Length: 114
Length: 115
Image (cartoon, rainbow over all chains, first blue to last red; front, side):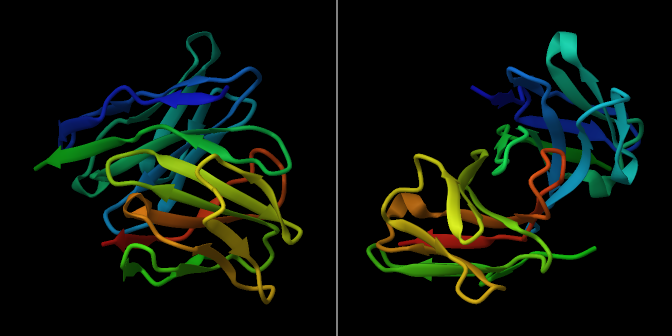
């Protein structure tokens, strides 16, 4: 069965520091992988996605993620965090089917210190 | 960017009451979804809907839940007799087509509180 693990429930970084949020997945075929961000009171906004090709994908707001098949990982990175990046980040895996539901991880809450 | 709209943003109800959560998906989308997020937990799939019928549903989506697309624009989730454990943020989402890598567009959610 598909599953997604985000091992870090909370992460705190200082503004300007680099960030890496971890995501590991379990899936029997080539996964479709996504990172979503949820700001307080907001819905889920897609940051980036991977489905094929270059394993390093660029997203919005300066985020990138790298797909590593050997490690079953899709970690999210940002070289310099801004205070506005404080939010909850969800990794999700999907499959190619007519209904195409996503499986989400439990989320990582990011706190940014000024 | 087009948006999925959900109303109301907050809904408070008494246990045992019926609630209807409303969503207006993006107009040219064909696949519709409800997810929920209990406070502090992960976002969970409830149901998917395509061609005016349920395509897939999770174990959570029992007989107390139903979905409907009554008029070609709205997509509703009804909980027939709410329980305390139904308290959660409910997200509606839509998708243009069936391709696996097409992204889901999510609404901003309805926070349901069952007292």
